[in-house]
Image (cartoon, rainbow, N blue to C red):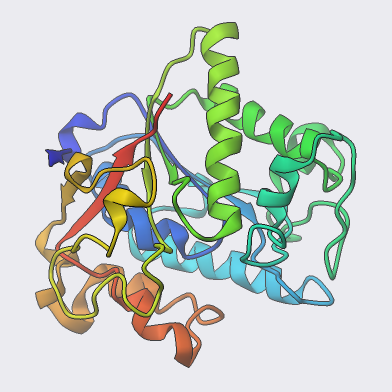
Length: 287
């Protein structure tokens, strides 16, 4: 096992996740500590979490929940970047990012239940609209362009994202997009950040992992034999007292998660709250 400390996170960091709440589940403590130590922080949320919604209402509510949740950890709205893409389901064959990554036709458009182009909030437009003056169509070319552009705009030394072993198609798809883009940037721009990836949905099943009661993460069943990651290769980030389990209702990570009311359905509550540990864990991205 390896360890990462807050004082090591110099040179800027960026958390890039598919959905609202992933940023808190995986990296709430990393973000809190980096900001507290005066580091430059950006949080990029790729989709609007609007699966099965017929209009923009759910997506916009989820974006506002991220603003409130990040605020509980000291991350201001100005540090959040919304890319504004669709959420079309969890299985790889249904997921927006998973499907687009596999799509070889760069301009093949995917239409969600409520849109065919990016959107965010009236008071906080999505990245593409702010940078290019128009909404981006839901295509592979646009997703790749926006991810590449946001990385070259900020050039963070550290990037934190989701991993290829995650069973959610958007989590895997984002990992594959970033791996592909970073390979290009290392060649084109001599940009070579350190990249870490975290696991939300393990092959063991959400009902079994993470365990509901422990202060630390336990290796999911068959983890070492089901993918490219190895449990002993994980990085551990120890959380400060105000984010540890013993703080109970005063725990800042708990307080942040409470802001994501749309995600806190009864069937998901225990799963989401099981990410409140005394640590956060992740792995280095394979190049």
